[in-house]
Length: 234
Image (cartoon, rainbow, N blue to C red; front, top):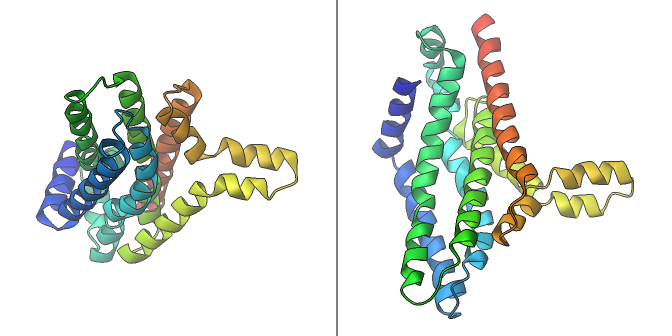
């Protein structure tokens, strides 16, 4: 797994992906911090984190689009399948590389909190809750994006499909409101990424939401492993 992880990290920074991701994330987070926090003369960063949900939704497909689809296009996936590493090692190596780059971008929010601490009292509990929410959201979305990348050889298709899926997940509350069958509505509401995320931004720590995001990450990494297994034996 370590070799796969290092390979993917090198790939991120030898291409434009890491720089595009970090630049765009820093740009929008900086704007939301300036407009929603500093100019409002508040130390509450919840508004910035709430606004970043959509930015994460757009950027994560950029991180995940080529992780497996490019391997399939270049036929290098066959080399991975015959390498002395488990399928879980392959998938998790790629997964943790993307999650590491995502976390590097996310750490800028802690820098903003330190800046705020010079101007007033920062509620660090809420800051950490917001940071955790964004980390868990990214962990789940990255797993979904990698799974989608494993289904196609075209990285643009992978990015577009991931974006479409994330939009549906974002709008699931609105979709649920249109459903009149109660048990279906309850199922849709229970799958809401956004509602769980917003709870964290308000300082509400819900263990079930943590389990939800971690479970999504595990399940979709498992699905990706199954795709590799099918490829290995086909």
